[in-house]
Image 1 (cartoon, one colour):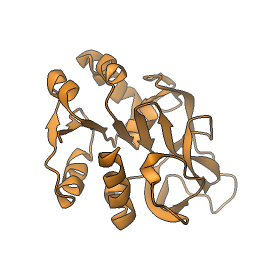
Image 2 (tube, helix red, strand yellow):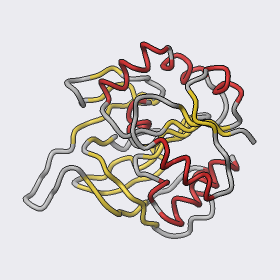
Image 3 (cartoon, helix red, strand yellow):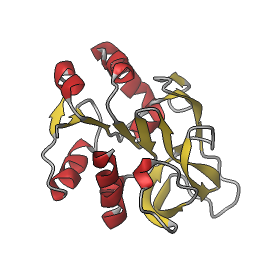
Image 4 (tube, one colour):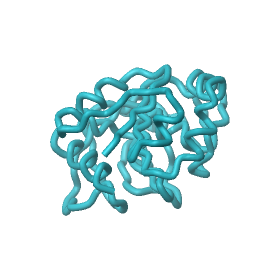
Length: 197
């Protein structure tokens, strides 16, 4: 099985690569479009900022490529957010539009609400092949200041300030707001489920 990680101007790409190596998978980290098209699975990770990322994806033609892929693709964190239609980050950014929903900025409601939402939190209402074998609420690791509201593509929910989409799924596109590569055994199970789709 050939697994490709999309190489672009984002942090965190190599921590995903290391997580896959722990599962015995040698992924290729690449920006080569033919290599990405030929992969059995594609991972689109990201730590960064939506506006800069969208400029880079458009300039490289990667925006069109991501939308034409038909194999399972997993977006992580910023990868999930730029797969949505629009983000409030960076002064309003039009994104890839794979998921017809918006990314909103967390607004603290009370004194103890800290932004970014950072640390371990639970997944509920899991509804996707990513969560195969899950029988209870599991803890995963988050770091984010923007969130996707619960919508028709929501595949898991987490509650922080308000309920939001911890994961999304539509057709061959899967995405997590949390970092499976930093979520211990639970994250490894999610990555393994993705590889087995």
